[in-house]
Structures are given as C-alpha cells and as structure tokens.
View 1 (tube, helix red, strand yellow):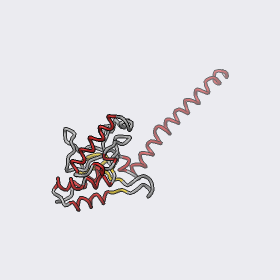
View 2 (cartoon, one colour):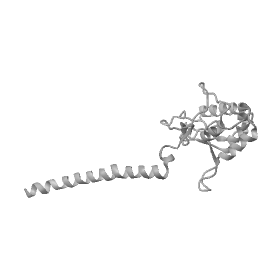
View 3 (cartoon, one colour):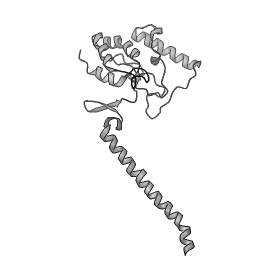
View 4 (cartoon, one colour):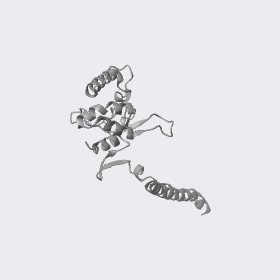
Length: 200
C-alpha cells in the first residue's frame, strides 16, 4: 500500500497544482485585469471605439477608408494612409514590396498622380505617408503635413472657409509620445468626425 501511495502522490500533486493554477491564472487574474481595465481605462479596454450620436463609427486604433464603392477617394473627407490590408482589422499586413519592385513603383506613381490632381499640389510636395502603406496596413494616423495638404480640397468640397478647416487640423495634431518618441500625427477618423460637425 505504501508503494502505491508513493506512486500516486506525484499525480495528486500535479492535479492539485493544475486546479490552483487554473483558478488563479485562468479565472482570477483575467477577471482582475478586466476589472482594472474597466475602472481605470474603460475606453481603451473596450477597443477605443469612436461614436457619433451614440452609434459606433470605428476605432481610433484602426484606420479606415473614406472612399466610394469603386474605391475612389471622397473629396469631402480627409484621406487615410494607403492600406495593403484593405483596412481589414482581421488581416493586418504590409505590402512587403521591395523598393525596386515594379508593382510598388507603379502603385506609388499612381497614388502620386491621383493626389496631385485631387489636391492641386505638385507631385514632389506630397508627403511620403500619403503614398506608402504602413507595416500593419491599419495605421489610423497620417502626418500633419498630409492633413494640411488636404485642407484646400476639403474646404472646396464642403463649402467651408479654408482657415476653419486648417484650425480644425491644428486642434487634432498629436505631439510626440512622451515629448520625444516618434513624430507628430493626426488621427484621421477623429478628425473626420469633428469635420462632419463643423458648421458652414
């Protein structure tokens, strides 16, 4: 009997450890983290959802397109950075093109020509983030330079004063993280939501 108990003991210890670990790490810890998130940072914990009149219109963490059914840019909206993922949150991906890839070069040239025509700017003045996709394909931000470049087009399309649209962009420029990390950015979805509420 003593031999049998000695043989079974490691299994009983393992089972007890599995039960304790499951309760602590599989139930208590996730519930605690969920509770802390809901109390301390509810917006971030729930996906940083942006709402208009109580209805969700997207997440401030995931870029989206402002185009028509044919994929043409809608002139009355600020345009996002191009996306190799089609702005699909379940399919985050970059283009993975090399800088000398003919398809990559053709895409850049096509975007450059389209933006130059729609925004009335010289091709050489178009910011790089307006032409290239991000590594995730879901970048919700553009550079302030790209946002300011679009001001004139949007003001014309909406019949707004250009200075008012420029001031709106000013209000949405986010500085570097901690004052020194990264570059200033503009969240396109949040900017477009504010734009939709701008009175003529």
